[in-house]
Each structure stands twice: as structure tokens, then as C-alpha cells.
Amino acid sequence: MRHRSAAALAACALLLTGCSTTPSAEGADGRIKLAMLQPPRSGLTPFSDDAFKLSRWSTAETLVTLDADGNAQPGLATGWRRISDHAWEFTVRQGVTFHDGSALTAAAVTNTLTRATTASPKPRILDGVELTAEAVGENVVVTTGTPDPLVPQRLSSPQLAILAESAYRADGKVDPVGTGTGPFELVAVDGTTTATLDRYDGYWGRKAEAAGIDVSFVPDGTARAAAIRGGEAHIAEAVPVSQAALLDPATITEVPMPRTNTLYLNTKSGPFRDQGLRAAAREAVDADEIVRGVYESRADVARGLLGPALPWAAAGRVPLADRTRAADPKGTAITLATFSDRAELPEVASVLQQQLEDAGFTVTQVVREYAHIEEDALAGAFDAFILSRATVLDSGDPVAYLQSDFTCAGSFNLAQLCDGDVDAAVRTAAATEAGDQRRAAILAAEAAVLRTDAAIPMLHERVIQGDATSVVDSAKDPRERTLITSATRLR
Image 1: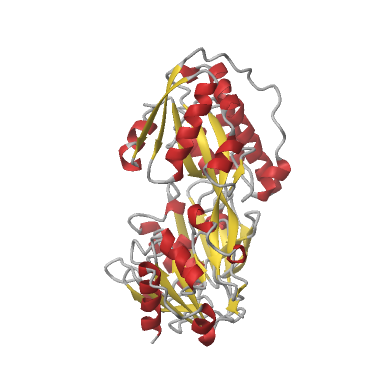
Image 2: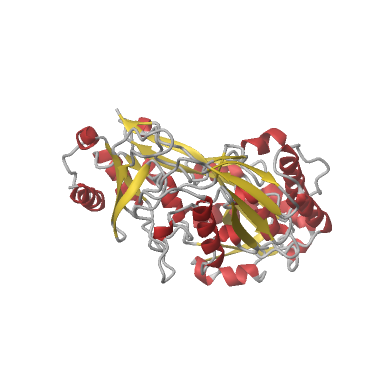
């Protein structure tokens, strides 16, 4: 019956047929109807980005969780300590059962972590990391090839969710159905169409308020918005900006994302080798105009590379003094590029082109699909490139982003930047223990990047979540790790 209900939801949302069932009627059984943006891409294996679906459904859990500031908090591990430069010991929570009835043990944890290190491809959080896990009594010892102050934060990644041994098949595939530890048990998946979860009454923590979750995958943003407006869904992910104004304001929430829309300037070749011209571009950018015109004021003007999704950044940031003085462009010709996959970026490019031309540059615009422009962008083929970029990755820490985008050896260095002060600041941040000192070091590295004018942060994006007025306590998570929790329910 639940399968037919979920399938009906998908049909209503996709076809916009105006099904007569309202959320209050559909929710009479206490089940939450959820319309999600992307269908599973890898069969819901936790070693892929599908892991974030399992996390948002509260069916798979990790040893460690993160608080709003990115600090490590207990999850399936009740505590941990560093026992050497290379090794950490985690205490496994007792009294936890997997949905298949087996017990959470140190051996089960070790099994998951070991399989993650040998998966192909490996979970993103383990890129470049040599990691081993060993069960020692009721504890698990995690050892890394080099000293790593972020091991607890790494183990918070949904891609390292702990599943029962029955989840792992001989052919290397992972089946999360009935093998998690969360308050909801995944009981069925219908390909890329629907998924069904039931409350798990044997949960070790707070029991779920809702009876279950009926998930439909609805890639079309207009259809997801219509599902909230027409009453076919209780919660909808990622409502497009263009649809938000059509919804009752009481049904939408704008959540700041750790994602920054940035103008990268090529510091290695072309006109922007001159920092005076980079400063002229910086002064030409009117981010307020972009936020108002392109994002309909549903974004935040950037004050740095790190935005309001990281509250400590604004609190600890010190305004830069003695910025490089802007030179007169005098008609300098530049190429400004971006990609068309994100609908707002070509619009941003058009506004920016006008702003730069008003400042005295001569601008040629290049827009292609991302797959056809990334190679040229990374090779430095353009003078300027607009990118919407995530600033924290799976560990909840921005250092990996700063390393990849702004250091001499960075793998995603669109600005072609190689600056000794930047490299030194990023190295210091990477070596600093988690906590206030690390956050201060990160902001020092951000300041070092901004002083070069190699990157001009323009705005921080928000995601718009739709919730029917009958929904209580859905999560509004900037990292998109949680959505429906034990506390989420219908009135």
C-alpha cells in the first residue's frame, strides 16, 4: 500500500494533475511524503554521494556527528582519544542494533571502514588518505599514514556510515536496505522512482515521531514546488528561486549553504597577472546588484570566501586593510567564462560583463556546458571564470577547499595562483588541531587569498526547502546531511 501511495505522489508531482489528496489527509497515517531532487545514482551505496540520502532519511548513521560549528560530537561512537601522532581510539556505543537484528560491535565498525578504504572509487572523504581500522576489544583504533588532526571529522562523513555486515556483498556492492542503525529503516527501493522507510522501534536513541517516510524522486524543480503547493508532498528539497515566490511564504525556508559564487582571475597569464587590474575587477563587482537581480534577493552578499553557513567565519573575520590600489583598465580586453549547467551562472556572467565594461574593461563572454569547459578553465584558458563552489567538503572543514583552489599544487586552482604567503597560511591551517585555533588559522588563510585578489567572492547561495504547514521539526541543515529526524512529525 505504501508503494502505491509513493508512486501516486510521484505521478501527481510530475504530471501536475492536481491530485485531490491534501497533506493533512495523506498524513493521517503519520507518514511523511518527501519529494527529493536527485534519484539515486549508485544504487544507494554509502560509498557514493547517495550516502547523503541515507543520512537525510535518518536510516544510516556515522561514528561521529558535527555541530553547527563543525565540532565533532558523539554518534555511534561515544568518545575518542588520540593515542599517537597517527592513531585514534574510538569507543563504540553499546546496546545498538542494526535493522537486520545484528549488534553494533567494534568488528562491524572495522568491517565498514576497511571496505570503504578498498572501495572503487573510494569515498571522497578518503581521497589521498591512507587509513586502517582495527578492532581492539570493544574499541576501534583508526590509524592514518600521516598525522591527521581531522580523523574524527572525517568519520562524520555520510560516506562512512556504519552498516551491518549483511549489507556488503561478495561482488563488492553494498545494499543499505534493512542494514542501518537509524530511527527509520529502509524497507524498499523502487529503482530511481521511490523509496520507503518505516519507523524502527528498536532504535537506540529517541524513537521517531513519524510512522515512516515515503520518498519520491522528482528531478523537475517546478514539479517539486507544485507538489508542496498542491498538497502532494509534505517536504520538498531544493525549490527553485523562480518557484519560491509562487508558494505560501509559510511553506518555504531559505537555508544558507556553504557554497560561494566566486570570480576567479587568472594570475599566471593574461592581463590579470597585474594585481592592479585584479583590484580594478574587484572594485567593479557590485554583488548587491547580482543578488537582487539574478537571485531575487535569495542569496547573501559575500564578505569573504566563507559565508553564513559557517557562523564562526563572520564572527572571527577581520576586515582587510591596505588593499592593492586599482589600476585603470583603459579598455583592457578580457575573456569572462562560466558554464550553463547552473541556470543562474550565465545570468551572473551577463551582469558581470556590464559591470566590468562600465569600469573600463573590454569583455568577451564564453559560456559552455561544464563538461566542455572544465578542462580549459583548469588549464588557464580564460582570464576570468565564474564558479559556484562548495567551501566545505565531507569533513565540514574548509581547508581542503583552500588547498585545492588556491595553493601552488592545488588540483582545482582556476586562478593559477602560486603565492608563498598563501601556501604557508594554508599549511598552518591544515596542521592545526580542530577547534578555535584551527578556525583562526583558516581565516588567516582566507585573508591571505583575498589579499592577492585572485578570487573575488560575490555571493553565498541558499537552498530553499518546502515544508507543508503540517510539518513540525524538519531539519534545515546547510551541509544537507539531515532532513527528517526522530523529532520530525506531522501535526
